[in-house]
Length: 423
Ligand code: ATP
Ligand code: MG
Image 1 (spheres, rainbow, N blue to C red):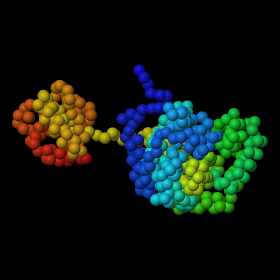
Image 2: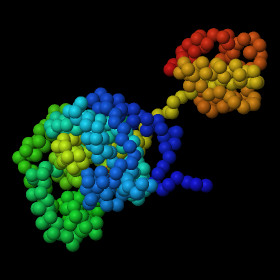
Image 3: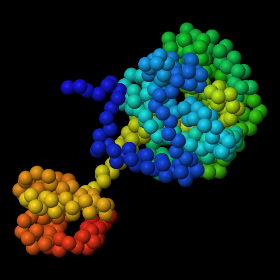
Image 4: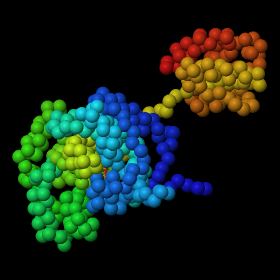
């Protein structure tokens, strides 16, 4: 038996209704907020992620699926979407036709991590990116989109929205300096990972999940005290807009993101309901990213939703949706009936009836058991006797009542089914 690759999982039909609920709600909202779908490829040049995420990010340091293709080029299976979306935006010069480019994407991402509940090697994200301008109201629109999505899914109350500002090219270096000084003083108390981060990427220490580090970091300097006047004002306006919209949030001065490209606004939707995994969605502003990728000074802001974790939250809430129900089962007895039945099935299916038909030499009883099993509310029975009379039988599965109808009256039959099963 060949099994699936570790960390790569199948999403089974019984799981799909919740997945579709998330996906369909998201698509509807993204479009309502003015975003258009942009599909990016799975493979990118490795350089794209190295340059954008930063050499010292966890993803680039240890999580990427990178290999040389047959031509010897180093390629990487996308670990996230923002860099690819930015690349596509620049490569096709979409900024010419669309100075404010708002795009969304849904698809799998790949990271070589230790698999556990809510953490996979292939997982799915819903992404939203708005390229083109810097404005607290755009940041607010993006954040309120995330807020609205979880509200519409009925799980916003299971999450907390945390917000922070990471400053800009001007003020972040000053904060970094004071953080480095602090970390130098407490270095012996930090975990081995943080010892390394301290030298290579000190901001990332703030994001460490080790309790002992979090303890030490309680006295760490806050970025809020180092923000320049512009960044301070920017944050103030963003929060005021969020207040005006009634979006609930917490400012968390310790919130940083694992990737290099963020500037100013960063946010995360966290939960205490998923064990070790506490982030369901995350995002922020990235005003330097496009310059790093394509030498164009175009700012952006966006977020990524972890779909597996969102579906887990829906399950936690006790949500379930039945898969698409069957409307009808077609029981056929005899060669001639199967031939005639095929035509009938096709005609009804074209009219949107979700119908399953029999393909095997089975007794009527066995066929009706199957109709029960797939929970079809109606069964159509067509055997030699009915054929000879030019009729068919429609059986109401719940009540056990039956009605004989003319075989040729397809329109009438379709209307009858629609009325009976209300679709
Ligand atoms: P974490 O801290 O849990 O590793 P992250 O900061 O690496 O998350 P992001 O890069 O911000 O995650 O991705 C956005 C969202 O994608 C996360 O909030 C999470 O819901 C989801 N996600 C990230 N990595 C995984 C994974 N390996 N498996 C499942 N979902 C993931
Ligand atoms: Mg991670």
